[in-house]
Image (tube, rainbow, N blue to C red; front, side, top):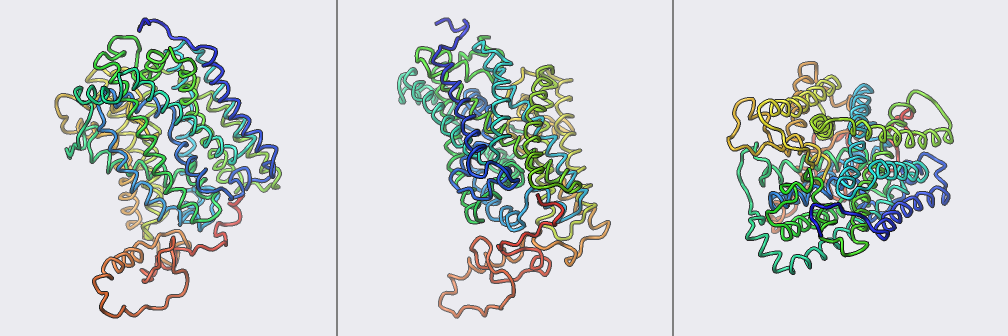
Length: 612
């Protein structure tokens, strides 16, 4: 086969791709016309709060395992080796902290939108700021998420660009608008199975084409693609153990801790315990997804070696590497290219549908419902119309992305990652610091966004003026924050280490969320103390996590075994809740914490005008 010649789908490939779209649409139609027929906002937006942990965990994983991740991570491993695999270490704290801190706080408040928390803790202005920021973030990302895989498919196979965009966007919009969260979750489950099957099939056949597992190992080892632990503390180095294992924790928290798309799934669980379990079960799912993507990158290197299709100018950018590999090496296996494209678009559909549902939720709950009274039937109809409208808006955004040149596109992609960190900082300010006030929250968020755009876009423009910017690449990705800032930081690996302001601009993209969230917390606390900190009595019940009480309880449990021969210390009888996620709390903590964390009871503490 001519490696530079065009690649084409067979009839079987088209059939497999079409079956994916038909199956996804069928799941949405099934939930649209069965059960309660999505007749209430609770069913449409929260699946009647009756979801089990297994489908939720797969949906949580699929939501941000986007198509850019499926085609980006293998390209990163092919080019730079397995160092990126260490991001799996960040999944531990990145999921434990949401499971034991964010989920208990949000679940016990019986929220509908995660931004309702901001009004309970601060004021309505903070809530609106958070909501508008999230909408801006998601619309841009979804537009890029629809367009990017379609563009790669078009460049490699000649598959009609706008046919792929419209097929993805319209199918996703219809089943999300008709089937609600139930359809979104169960299509995520189906699409996750397709995604894993497609990746595994490509790996198995690729290993066979490369000469077997032992031959693959020899080639990647001799080619220097098996990376050891890089403990370089330099924050400007793109990928080290510290940037991936520590900086990645903040990326994970911005996704699995405070993002509406994920929190909405936690809140749809039958119980708080099942919500926590679904968060636990995401860990092995993410590890499997990461492993498959990295193995695919190694198999690609075993097949091509240093003769990269990009260097041979068979393709124009790294985001086309994986599709080129599938079409080039696996063309003699009818149906396999179609299966992988189905895998690719499954990842895209799961991300897009989750975004549509969460966008409809925050718009309805945070921007419309508090200001306009309406019947349940009208609220449900409006929620469906919002999901449909956001589908059309994101298709329009995909067209805007199409009109952009590569430099502007890179800046647009980086906006998603820039926003996640400040939003994480805003929620941390409210949950962990009872003294923070509304003025500090607003100014802190503004400062975090300012720093994010300054470092991101300012650094990008500075590098454009001093060096040649490489073609757009969407390498490394497991989370949107990873993907979207990579393009901006692709030239970090320079021969000489930057100093001064250039060094600040060259900060690894993995530290962006940590920097931006820390800025929000620090500035927010300074402004709060300057304008008068919030008193404990003024903090709404259940909105602050009892850090001191939990720390004392944990310390007591750690030292208790050493005192096994002594009588246990006298326990004070404390009124109110004694358990958080099943852990007995022996100390009441500070007065502010005792008064501001709820027990797990069925009473809703969200104000009446903000609940759907």
